[in-house]
Length: 171
Image 1 (cartoon, rainbow, N blue to C red):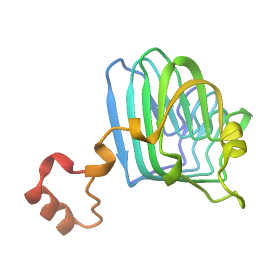
Image 2 (image 1 turned 60 degrees about the vertical axis):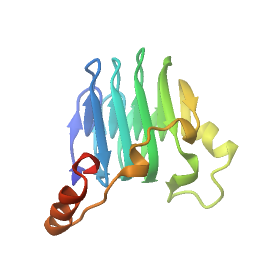
Image 3 (image 1 turned 120 degrees about the horizontal axis):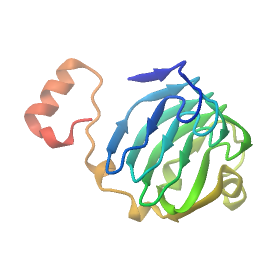
């Protein structure tokens, strides 16, 4: 599925997750050319929400802060695993991810992250620019188990077969 050409006056150009206790899982999506007037060009996660972002292509999204993801709020959690980014732009800070609260938790698997705009290694210098603001970072080991059990489907027949095998792992 694709989230494309959306605009939000405030937060979350493609998706704005703000309800306490909400868990939203995205797997195998393209998030392309979305714009937020304030925070989170592609995704905004706040107010205790839980977001799991797996196997995504996130391209040409724009915001003031956090072109790909803006995460804030007490008990807010976001997991980022196997993401490819390109051409995202934050006019103020956090051209990939911006943290708006030390009470928010970001679980990120940096080994499965690809930035198509970068020629060099995604080293400490890269990550110090890519993730800005204030957020509690956790290693890939802290990411939810979801990514290890996810089932990828691209046709109706594959979906039917996956449902017959194990319905709790469908994405």
